[in-house]
Structure formats: structure tokens, C-alpha cells
Image (tube, rainbow over all chains, first blue to last red; front, top):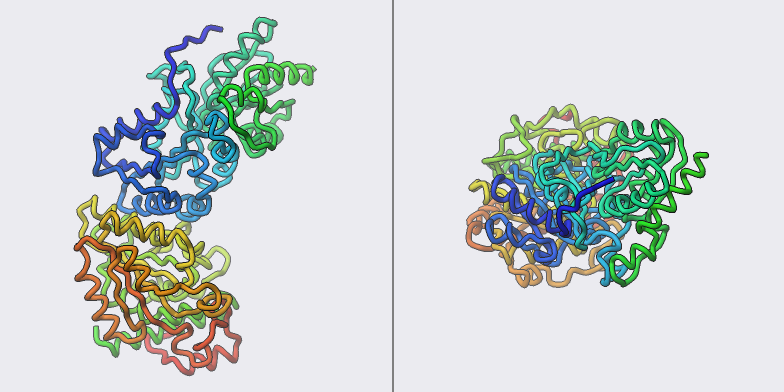
Length: 317
Length: 280
């Protein structure tokens, strides 16, 4: 399989570029930040639209409430802070004032997962997808690379309702074309294959592409799905692929509990039970370290996907 | 509106509150009775609203947010009496499939409500957001919020207070229902607020004080508050009220914060409140 690397950038920069473009095209889009403007790459929006940028200070609960209130009158607020402070710290504010109240707030979360790196476990949230996908009315999106994060940022402005958009800090390969279609709730089949399905989101999509090289060298035909929308989940894409391959590996930079893999297994157990292996963090907090070292130590690296694929193939028999 | 008419409305609202919580043996009558005068005044005299044609965006209208959502009975009664929805619907309060949820919500589309509340401390942030939205839309109408005094123990209130003054959000008038009582007892026994007026002043707000059971006081203080809008500072009114106001045996105690009267208690309470607009 040949997947062309188009460059290397961080997904948060894709958010920054998408937000800046929205600033130029949609006058209702507002941006709010809790003292992390540079980290979230919101500088371009701020520079071009100072009247539509709101520096809230280190007060994330207040930021979520203000964003909810701003929707009354037709504004589309995008909040920006780290994933930990975008979810766990403000779960009740999101639950009552945004999800239950069906407010058109876009919760944009950077530095998600282990790849935040050296700051350590206090900042490395691995439970956010679970928390957000449990909320009724919430759409949950985890784009795979810089280009897709930019596309997703632009797409969610036209989607009516609360959205959680999760992205990250490290520079990673860009492999999705800038003009590739992005449809909320419609999975991308990155590569077709017959022996095993790998369903991944976020940074683990690239890791899966790396894993496929080794697996193909061993004569294994892999189908790779980029499940950029965790909720609503593209059940048809999962079932169509699994009907062919009869086994699945899920891969995510998140706790296994509550994550993409669990969402997939729920679909399979109701419709088409097949063996599944889960690549994710196993009920553990992270720690300080370089991003790629952490992915290896906590079992969400390329080798873990290869091992999981071989194991699930063996279980399929 | 003359005070006699407002007194009549508030009396009927108090009857509604008591009959609603009695019917389902649950809900929060104490704070509801305490805010009946204020909310009657707001909706029948002060707010520039379009009750018959409710829209979520509320453009060119004043907006009201109830942050202490547990006093939903008084809000529902006033909304119904003001024409947002049929008065007969008050009989569905807290019942299965009702639009009148235990705490206010938007998901069942009850006209008059723009934000769920109940988990405390969130309404000031929401009001500030809505006020900013009004400014961006060049809408000169105002945003009003109501909060419990116990609710001020929530930290988010003070995050919001700090933000509003620093950013000159001067089209919002927050009112504190200062009855000095909360579920566990007197506010001063649970967690005192200290010098509340000085706290708000220190946070950069214009602070006014008001007797929440005297329509002349309510009118003159609300007029003062409105005249202070647009001058660079948010405005807060510390409204002195009595929990359980209007029913002698419900006053002077926190015990009716969240418990409903039984049949005999309801009868004794209703004898003290004239039926002026017709019970639902």
C-alpha cells in the first residue's frame, strides 16, 4: 500500500487554520479561550477578528457557560483549551448548559491523550471521548491529521448542535488530501482489504498505516477505516467491513474503557459478533515523557497494532 | 401597573406554587414564595417580552435566566399567567412527559425557557454570554438573571463576576434572592457569605439593595438598575426576601425549602392567599 506523506504538522494547527478560515467566511463564529491562545493556535483568528475573540482567563466553567449563553441570538461559539480542561473539569457545565440545553457550542480540545508528552498525567486526559460520547445530543469528532482537523473545524460550524472536536499536540505526518471530502458521521475507508479490519481514530490512524506495511509483508490483507466521527458512529461502515474480514482491531489514543473500541464492540455484539482486539490505554494514567516513548510504553504504538492484528486473526481461526 | 394589581397577581402565583408542589408532593415552595413578588413585577411590568411568540433567540426582547432552577414552580406560574403557555398546564408539573420538569429545561420546548438550570452556579455565565451576544447583534435589550444566595457558594459565580466587570458587560442585571436560608439551615450556619455587598463591589459590580416584598422598592430599585446599564459596569441587586413569604407557618424557617405541604397545610396556606385570577 502506498500512502503519500504530504507533509508534517500538528493537528492543533489544522484547528487554527480552520478557525481562521471560519473567521473570514462566517460572521457568527466566535472564539473563546481560557489562557491558551498560542497552544490552541487561535492567534490568526484573534488577529483578524479581535471583536469576535473572547479571552476568558483561567476559568473554564465560566467559559462553557458564556459560550452556551452566546448561542442565544444565533452566535456559534468555539471554545478552545486543553482536552482535560475542556471535558473533565467542566463536565457538569457541558452536561446542563450545552448538551441538555441543546446549545450550538463547539468544544475544541487540544493536547488530548498521551502525546501531550512531558506535562504528564495531570494533563493527559484519556477519558474524554468516553465522557463526551455518553452525553445525549453531543457529536464527537477525532480527526486523523492536520488536513482533516482543518476540514472538521470548518464542517462543524455548519452542523447545528453541540460538538466535541478532539485533536493534539505532536507533529505527525499529513496523509489526507486537503480537498478530500469530510462528512460528519461518515467514516473514511483509507484502504480496502479482506483479512482483518483496523478501525482507528486520531493519531492512531497513522500508526495503523505504519502497521499495515509490516502486516502486508506477511501476506495479510488489511482494511483500514478512519473513524473520525465517534458519535454518531458509522455503523454501516463497520458492519460492511466486518462482514468481509470477520475480525476487528480498534486503535485509539484513549482509555480502552469508554472509547472508540467499546463503541464498535457494542455495534458488533448487537449485529455481527466477531473477535475484536483493543489497542488503547488499559485502565492506567500516563506519565511524563516524549510523546512517542509514551505511546510505546502504554501500548498504543505501531507494534501493538501489529500484535493485535495477528492475535485477532489467530482467534478468527 | 398599579401595586394593587401586582399584589393580586402575586397572590395567585403563590396559590399556584402551593397547589403545584402539593399535587405531586415534591418541589421547592419556600424560595418560590419568596420570589413571587419579584417575578410577578418583572414579567407583568418590566420585561420587554413577546410571550405569545416565544423564540429561543429572543432578539429585540429582554431575556431572563433563572439560575436557581429549583424555584421552578414560581417561574412556571408567572410564565403561564403572563401568556407563555396555558395556565391549565401547571397541573402537569413534575409529572411524566410534562413540559414542566422538576427543574427548568429546554428539551421539551416549554415556551419562556432558554436554558436548563438546577445544577447551581451556571446561570450568571449564561447570562453574560447572552448579554455579549446582544451587544454583538446591536440589540439594546437587557439580560436579567436570578440567583439564590446559597448558590453564591459556587465558585463559577465568582469566575463570572470577575469576567463581567473586567470586560464591561454592562447590559446585565443580576438579582440575588437573599433570604439567608438554604436546604441544610441558615446560610450563616452552612457557609456565611460575609459582607456580600462589599464582595460584589470588590468584583467591580454596581450594587443595589432592594426589599423583595415591597413593590415600590422593587420598582424604584429596578428603575435605578436599568438606568445604570450601558455605563461600563454590570449591576447586581441584593434582594432581601423571606423564604415562604405569604404563608405564616412557612416563614422564619428553612424547612419549606424543598418540602411540599400536606392536605391540611395546603388548606391553611391557601386561606391566607386570595384567589384573584382563578386557580388553574
